[in-house]
Image (cartoon, rainbow, N blue to C red; front, side, top):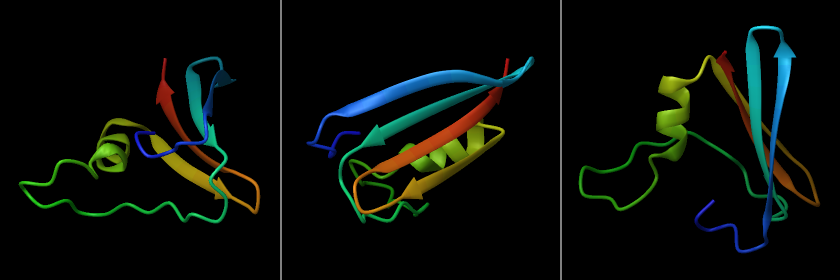
Amino acid sequence: MRHAGTGLRLSLGRTAPDRVRISVTDWAPGVAVRLRESGRDAEGGRGLFLVDHLSDGWGSVVDDARKTVWFELQA
């Protein structure tokens, strides 16, 4: 989100009675989302690492107009 520069939309909803899905959409088309390792002294690059380790699952959807990253948690 720090580098979006295009504005963003945050959505929150239930996918089941005990599950919540949070999604963030920005308008930076065609930018692939991938989990990567950050060096010990890196100032960024840990967001998806944290999402991957703290959530019950996550994914992304990228098209020519926008990018959405979502994750789910037990609620």
